[in-house]
Length: 226
Ligand code: NI
Ligand code: MN
Image (cartoon, rainbow, N blue to C red; front, side, top):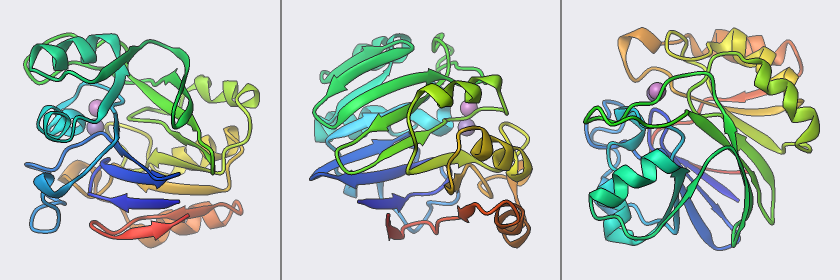
């Protein structure tokens, strides 16, 4: 299973021969500039956590070019459909069995409006019960009591959590989240892209290590094996 980081909260997971792209934001993403080209990205699925521009910026163009199946909140799918996206699967909080495995769309504590002002529904995250591994991407969220529900969701092989603070959890909050979801391998996202979310990498990694949890802060454009 491979994880490729495109900067901010945009990443690709390749598993069981399928490419799953999350929250595509490359054009105008300062951390992707000069390192990633949106036109080069292939995808079989695109999972979108919420409607903010830093999560849907390149959704329509990549979905149209690749014909990837877009999975997101009903309201975000309706917005994408109006712009010509034809392969999609709308959800609300609940689960559905896809070819990539069961996907559980879970609440995030955040907000969700699309770049043109269209209501984006409730913001969320995804638990993917894949054939190789089970993992969780929280989307943008604060520390929330929703994490208590993970005692019923099965064990997570790894989780992708925001660590930049200000708009989401910071590293200290994400340590608590990792403990609440009982996951020992965390990939941090939503950091360093903008001034408000610049972080001290070594301090963040040390905070997790102190609790026996691995924090990976991925490099833009690089692929890691999980
Ligand atoms: Ni957001
Ligand atoms: Mn965001």
